[in-house]
Length: 357
Ligand code: DNO
Image 1 (cartoon, helix red, strand yellow):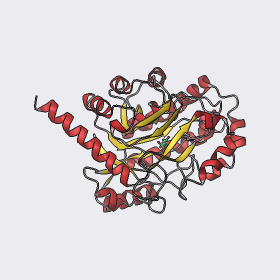
Image 2 (cartoon, rainbow, N blue to C red):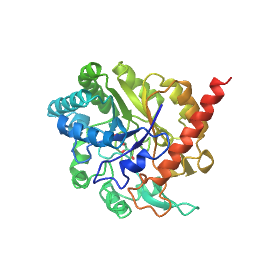
Image 3 (cartoon, rainbow, N blue to C red):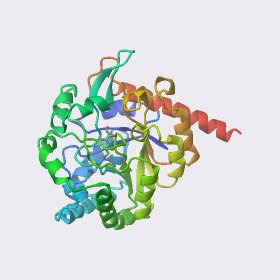
Image 4 (cartoon, protein in one colour):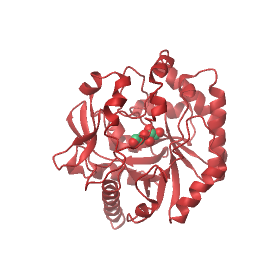
């Protein structure tokens, strides 16, 4: 594995490349052109400028999170081919710049959903949290308003105000899209992009739906092992793979996280590792990475990644807000640096155990 951290780019991230470079063992960043909109072509010039900036700081671009998918592609609207062509052009430009991993999601309307961005934990840190009861009491239009005050001034990925302003129209546009239709539209998209992925050896890594169930009646398909298997079989190409995100798949307590990792051997292109603490099956908060702070066994998760010979980028995922840091919720420096160090420690111990007999 390669230890990385997510970085939103100069002007968007409170964390600097210099700080990331000083986290032990981190050699790359997972980044994006945060000011592009879904459907837009990423020019080679802009990709190269981003790459130059990252490399000047002594790091590399280990992958992109995300090149977002235009809603027309997810809905299957008549204009989708134009947006797919643009996506292909973006992939080609990334490939030309030697970037080989792209994370994306196929969630309708919203990306991830949380009911709170700053729930206080017993140690005084604040974390992202989800309560189904709170979500049920809101309508989608008011949910964004209810949480944005806790965003520390940041634009949250997937919650861009321009998209949220059109939320009613978006819901209307998705009204005939059920799970089957969404699978069909995903297949159509993947079939069209696989040739460019083959040509440039680009691993597509679909991010799970978070939480891993339907929210506000919208269909969600990337939620469990049978659905991932279906997704991979329907376009059976090693470049059609997944992002294993423990915090997203782990929202459904029936998902056996280490077991899923083992089943995804060869198609797992990117790993997000974090922990959750459950108060009930549908109320959880994002704990520190350390196993004992939450409900996941991080040792078993990292061990499963080790055992499948995972060589792709891994990143600590959402961190708690600690030590008075003011940053994008989930994406401060301090707790993610602690997470990276912890995961590195687990990896080293597992590796030494395995190789020293
Ligand atoms: C949230 C992230 C997601 C993820 C996208 C991938 O913090 O995990 O926004 O980046 O779903 O496209």
